[in-house]
Length: 102
Image 1 (tube, rainbow, N blue to C red):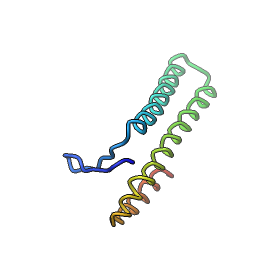
Image 2: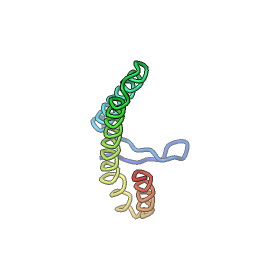
Image 3: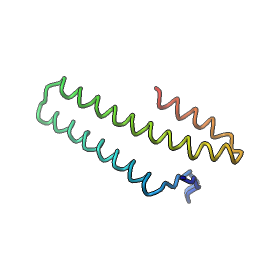
């Protein structure tokens, strides 16, 4: 699975498999396309309700990205860190979850 390492700047880094990385990047590319579509709708003076529906689709796509990344983080980084005795990862996870559910 993925392995977390410290990078040269002292921050944390997660190494992902090529398949994991590709899947996440594809999701982000779709989101980026949706955002460009939103901008185009505004530029074309699209009807507000139509823009709001597209905006809701963008929010749903971002939420799906977050859920997938969170699941990967819990199954990989969190489980590994707890197994290795680094219990502080639980507090970090709580902080992340609090930010996600605002």
